[in-house]
Image (cartoon, rainbow, N blue to C red; front, side, top):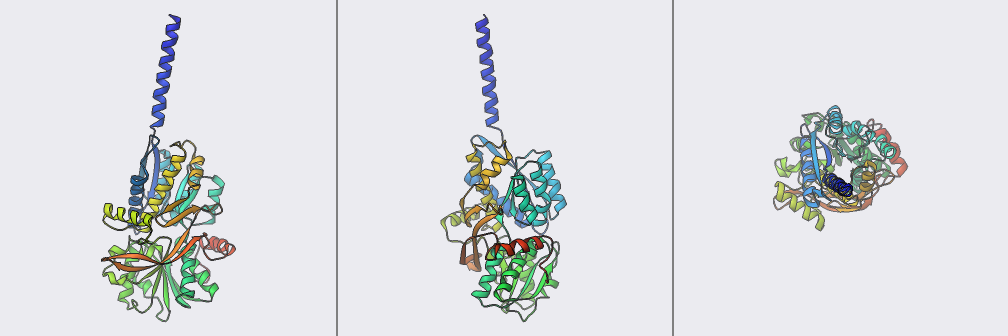
Length: 413
């Protein structure tokens, strides 16, 4: 009887252990995603959400039996709301990874909190030396998206060397992202011998930008523009109404001619012919990108915005890392290390993460907005391969300017 009882006990323990193991294996991987779904950047946020969802559909929503569960929260345009959302994701939803905010001022508020709670974070943009240092300090974060100096430096070099522009005006949003993308262009263009005739700064929450567009001098050879969302749509309308279209060429950064913008521009000719310096052109001819762009169009009825591609790439990085860990996310640092180690061929091109800046080493492109089969597309005309985060600038110049422009506009602008 004692032997029989022992056998029953062992069987019960074995059954309990097996049940517990099965339950543990099926435990969900909880991801919190912070995106603006209202406000001036709402279209960008929705595109990023759509891209991430398509990425999970493509690369897998279940890893080693663990389903990936995603909670999206709307950050609006407010750093305060973004931080409150992050606190909700961690304390109430108990997420194991945060896909970071879209806007630079929100990232600055959210990243230290999230990593300080022991949760890894993949941000969209590298916005400050503090953020970069926190990545190193906590060993829990990075950005898979970009920093503003890569495309802006490449754009300035192309503007000076190829287009032979020497007198340019700039217009950008009056916060860290705008300061850095305009600052990177300013630093490279000025070092080459060009002159920034005037810098115009637009408040992030401005709902009417006509007065700012009217400040563009008419004696410049081109205007360099950083605007996004509804402000970018307005820019093209106002630029044409002031008679500048066709007279002063426009070179934008990624966000100006993103597919979150182009479908809303009317007439289409207002945006056609615009140049843009970007880490992604939606009409890149590579097989990886064409497959992605066509799948995105089939699912959502439009071609992918940069933000769509960013979300899609985030999903690929996450799923690849989870596969390396067999779905085990009990260690935030192990998950962050696995994500940092990923080298992928994304729709935008090869992507790896710099061990110095914790931001991507990737291609930069000059694209031109062209009518392709009745749809405005960003068509690549120049490729700069494997750009470091500081672009063509000396690393020391970038480090100095990056610090200055994370808290204020470029000096003298």
